[in-house]
Image (tube, rainbow, N blue to C red):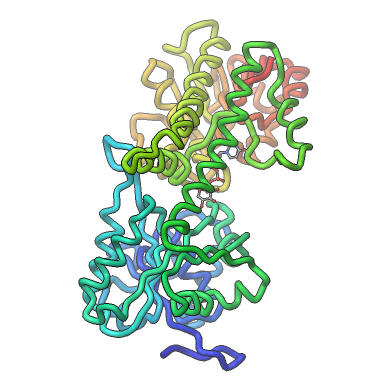
Length: 448
Ligand code: UDX
């Protein structure tokens, strides 16, 4: 079953269950590669938006590609599992695995619901492919659940294919990934996955074929490594602060060593987002459950270093203000967890803004893309329409997300609107010498 590509080979028909960040991007990209794709979500509002050509989140390049693929007729959306099961030869499960409230463990209820919802309609040989980030050994359990619930029984197989896409680069990361990981339990499943990624494999993309547990682990191991690298340089920033050294020069000097490399070695306010923080916590939690907690206990420290960056940022703002936050006007530049994103999940920027608000400061926030999300989540904060707008009469300006438009602000332009020329650069986004010579009192984490 399936359509035929230009070379005459059979293309499997695909479904994508869960059309959030990962799923919507995957569905659109696969359709752009020539596959017939049905995207499914239980949220009918999301489905209506996507079907009408609207991407429900900020991702450069995705709206254009959605329009193109919808017009090609190779992509449609549904809320019906029966329809998805009827359409697909290969089903990608892309639902979210958020942190459980009050625990470090990850919430698998969406993954379980997706597998159950789909399984009962699977009446023919098909492959279900998990892409969600899950605790190791989840896939083995889900494979059993699928076989038990699917009318096709043993004919339905499960594979795991972790996804490494970054927000802001999601389309490119999906179409031109560094590598593909195929976690499989049979040669048939490996062949099916190869058919599902044929155009990407034809680019020479490396593939690592593994068992299910290894595939699950690759994702959390990769994110743990990245988080550790960021916390490593931020730990060095703490040491720099205590010794008068400069973490920016330190990072630069380290980066020239190819074995270390400069990527993910940017010191500052630390990591946030929907992945890194919850993934390292869920990994530590899972490791403790299976009796190897000690092996990754350093991840607790990675998390702690990262959280300390937020409180240290507030300490420096307080120092700039002469020891008090209450009643002071503070301009916060940035709300998103990183630039080129409207995502505010575990955003360090908003955490800092909210804490300063809670300490009695008069906080105003501006972000180029994340204002609507921020307003919805934190209506108690005040928001403005531009960097200059929130900086009007401010006692201090705090740069929390390194958007290009903040990097480009002229010290003289900002000086015209603020009450006091004090700036806390939480992301090392500005040139300290330039701002100081323009008369600003400039502070940054890990710098003299
Ligand atoms: C991450 C992984 O990079 C990706 O492979 C995985 O699939 C999902 O999680 P993402 O959450 O989009 O992607 O963000 P990323 O670009 O990795 O940044 C994460 C956080 O780290 C951001 O808050 C960013 O500001 C921070 N960061 C990044 C630093 O503080 N310093 C750095 O050097 C790099």
